[in-house]
Image (cartoon, rainbow, N blue to C red; front, side, top):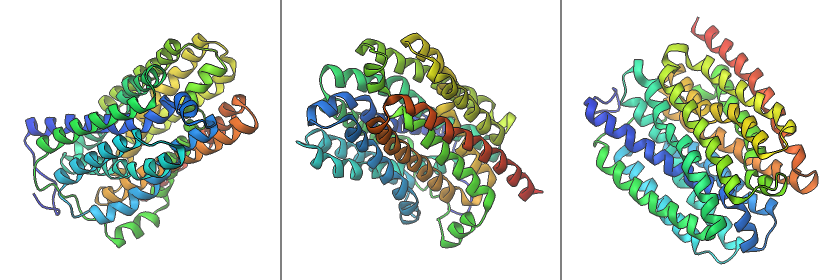
Length: 395
């Protein structure tokens, strides 16, 4: 296998790689979601406000935002088997140490360092599986491994919420550490040696930044990340303080969100190569717009459960569509573009979580859905423009 041509991997081994990377993304997603899932206990245990506890999520997202593109160039020459496995090992160590931190001041910087593992794994796993797949199956393969993210919402987020409310946030962080060790071992066993996608050169970065249609697609990722996490980062306190939901009801709502997320991602993986990544990405954001528009009308647990269904369907599948969209738009720049896309999603999450924290502190929970809706409407407009620009560039 060389960096000059796609890696040729036998079908059975390719399937093993895809499942291992899916599980790796599941663990990465669980580590991301462990903060919003345990937000109530984090605030109570560390004796801080909900808004301040939410900044743990924001700082982690900011780390991945800036770390993904900066690290992409540095790690471009590494064998992906070792790189992906060791990034998960670092993720395990970081979560284990976080669980032992005695104060918010000690936890905050360590949380930021821990998220460097996500900054490496998420974009490089996408670039690796795309590199190992034939062009006609590339979108499906990338979408498949990002099913792990939606599974993290189905299992990881509600379980983090249940563990945090029942045993405490430290146990939830320790569980992520254990899962990360398992994922590292699986990736190391499944991945072949010698997988090295093309290195990310300065010329590649320059070309990516100079192409309006590509930057428009990346902007879509930022916008839907900001819109969603304005509200999503504060789900558990919202359920408790506004809906007066019990722990069981909160966990059920999170499970429902995750179930629809998995359905959406599986459906996307099945049909994306048929309908096209551009159309799929825009459609998924439109579903989220529908949920945010309906949110103020949902005043009960059942009402919120119904309102979040379209959002959940489009939530994780939109990111999968974006990864496939960028990979198809410029295959030679895939490593750089997927790193930028990862940076954009986490920048959006950081902006959304930070602005949501400010709104909770100064305007209350009621303002969250309106702010998120504004971001998402802008996202649809940019997505439509980026599709047209990309088609004109090809023509």
